[in-house]
Length: 113
Image (cartoon, rainbow, N blue to C red; front, side, top):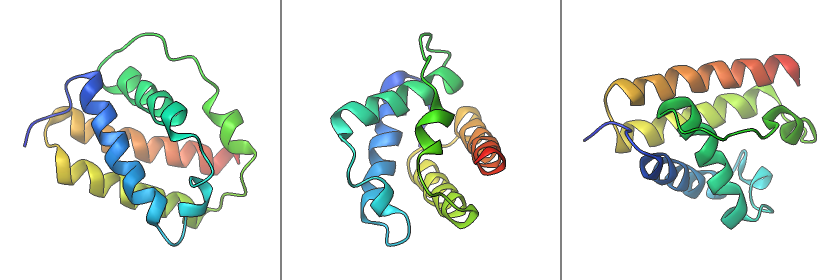
């Protein structure tokens, strides 16, 4: 396996991640109503900004999620699926960074929501 190196890698990661999210019994319902043709590229942009220094991400991630009735157990499941997707598809420094940063994202969101 190779590391996360490009925007296309981030897009692949997020696409495969959402494949898991959409069918998940615990948190799938949060994602099934989304227009994924619009949503997945925004999420990929976020991770590309963090992992491969792609400029231009300026969306309000917290504002979008504040409307949802999310609980700590939902974030734990989100992390489990995200880490699983990373580990199935990538390995290396950026893959490790994605795991590290996803833990921080989940902690921040749990703390603020």
